[in-house]
Structure formats: structure tokens, C-alpha cells
Amino acid sequence: MTEQIDKDSMVLLSASYDGIQKKAFLKFYDERTDTIKLWYDNTEHKPYCLIKKGIDEKLLESIKNQDKILAVEETAKIDLLNDKEENMLKIIADNPLEIISIRDRVPAWEADIKYYETYMYDKSLIPGIYYKIINNQIIPTRFTTPKETNEMLQKGIENADIDIKNKINEWAELLSQPLPKIKRVALDIEVHSDKADRFPDADEARYPIISVGFAASDGFNQVCILRREGIETGINELEKNIEVVFVDDEKSLIESVFRVIERYPCIITYNGDDFDLKYIYNRAIKSGIKKDNIPIQIPGLGRVSRGKNFNRTIEANLKQGIHLDLYRTFLNRSIQIYAFGNKYSEHSLNAVSSAIIGKTKIEYEGEIGEQTYYHLAKYNHNDAAITLELTSFDGDLLMKLLLVISRITKMPINDLSRIGVSNWIR
Image (cartoon, rainbow, N blue to C red):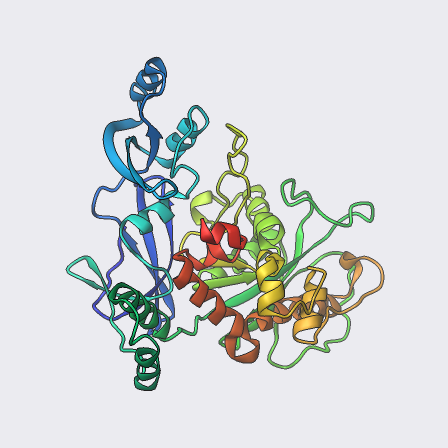
């Protein structure tokens, strides 16, 4: 349900869809409390797609008769490629999965866009900027372009057409808004595995999690270690600000991880979509933790594919906060070339962190599961720390860059951080 939100400005970071309430909801970052506030749609907005008129009547009738299809309406849209108006059919559905089923049967427009992104487009909501909630209405917070910037800008466009002037002034105001400093924690997990299986499969999640390291923007540093038979304690060479917590069973370890996740509005990982968060989720299920008590969401996990475009990528999301997978971010060629000058050519954590911040992973001999507790903790925390630093170096450069791109592309920060420029443009 919508949380109590007052009239102070908050930053719209992302959105999602609640399958139980069948509503889109927005995620606002409250800088005063460093928390995410949720706001649920109150306009009865529903998922939809567009198809051209003139399709086979029997096929159209079968679509209309589907239980989850709420309405089929005629609508007019502008074909920008051909600069003409075209009459189309708008198919309104009960939930986003029904739109996917239609897309697999007939050519459809606006069917490949995530529903909550469609919702934001339709409501003219721009991620990355400030809003106020007044009388349950979302109102953009207005900011004035700095005086010097505005004077230079007006001088440069004084001879431009009025439409161009308006558009440039609009962009200037948008990009002049302050950039929030988002509280965040980086996490990294280590998993015990057989020597023959050096890279555990996150889908199977056969082996226990033996360590989870945290490094946060507020100074929180912790490693949670699973006690195991035959493992030596070793020498504690960790910095004094790093806390090591020992637990006797994996379920307790996972529950402690969830408590940390729930304290932070933003979780940072390196390959968390395909490994860390997915592995934690699957081990939580195997440990007997109920889904309602798991703050991680893995949309489509275990779902049967219905068409070539269905569920092309698995993303690990959070029920309350947002998750940024930096592996996907640094894999982006535009980020690699234009933002970081092609400093790195490989995309592993070690390669990227070495090239950008001059820090590397800690080496060890043998298997990770054979390390002493304190060497494991040092190795694990180092991975989390350099993951965090990739977002905090040079005055939070990467976070600021993602927020600015979020405003320009009108995409949630967690979505744009995972995809290439062609999809930003789309």
C-alpha cells in the first residue's frame, strides 16, 4: 500500500509492479530519512498494447474473449516515421503477462516495454528528478537554473526559434536539479563448492553460502561468516572498522543479510543479477525462509517461456529498494568508452577496479572454502569494498552519471544501468 508521504521533495528513482494488487507503484528516495517510500497508482491505469486495425477477425475475436482482456478500444496514434496519423486498436489487459501473450500472437506496439515504464511515460514522470506528493497527486518540484548558467544559455539561444528556446530551457532546468547522495551498501558473497565445481550455479544453488561481505556509504563494514568444521580461525588482519560476525547455520546467515538489505535504499553488487542475489534467494528458499520474508525478487525465475522474446534477461530486484548490478553497467560500451576512456577491456571486477580505481582482489591459495575464517573475511570484504568504491570514487561520479542519464532517457536508474544505448533511445 502507499506509504505516508508528506509534502517534502523526494527523488523518483524507480518503479515496479505489484502482482497482488495489480498496480504499478513508484519508488521515491527520501533524503531526510535515507529511505525508499512507495506510492501506488490511484488512477486505475492498466497494461496495454497497440495493434493495427485489419487483423484477422477470428484472431481479434479470440483476443477479445480472453478472460484477462478488459477492453479493446479504437485509438489514433502518430506514425513518426511516415508523419501521419494511424488508427489502431488499444488492447487493455488485467496484468502485464497478458500483454506478453498477445505479443506472441500478433505484431504489437508498446508491448516490449516494461509495464511500469509505460506507466511512467503515460504519467509524464521523469526518474531522477524531485517531486512532491500533495493531496495524493505527484507534483514536480521546480528548480531555477543557476544565474550564470542561465545568462550564458539565453545569450546562446537568443536568435533561436521559440520552440527551440522552450525546449532548451526545459532541458536546462531538468539537468540543473541537484543530484542526491544515495545511501547504499555493496555486498558480495562467497560460496563453498567442490574442487570440480569452481563456479557454483546460482540456479541450482547446491552449496552453502559461507561468507557475505558488506561495505556501505555510511561507514558500515561487516562480514558474516558461517562456522564450519575443520576451518581454522586464522589471524585477524582486517581494519578495525570491519566487524566480523560468526553464525552457526546458513539460515541465520541469510536472515542477517536480509536485515542489512532492508536497512539500505540501494544495494550494489558486481554480477548480482546472475549470481549473488539470485544465489541468496535460492538458498533462502532451500533454508525454509518464506518468500514473503525475502526482500529480493527474481521476476520470471522458474517460469516457462512463452515466445522468443519472453523474459530475455533475469534481473534481481528488491521489494523496497533498488539494486544496481555494476557488471551490467561496466559492460555497457558507452560507459566503457565515453565515460571511462576505454581504461578497461575486460569486464571482471578485478579488471575494472584495477583500471579505474587502482585496486584489485586479494589473492589466495587453494579453494575459497579452505581459507581461514579471517582470510576469507578479508578477501570477501575487499570485494565488497572495491565494488562500493566504483560508485563513490571522484565524488560519486558513477552515481551522478547514472542519475543524469536517468533524467535524459526517462528510465529508472536500475533499468538503464543494465542496458545499452540502443535501448535507452528506444
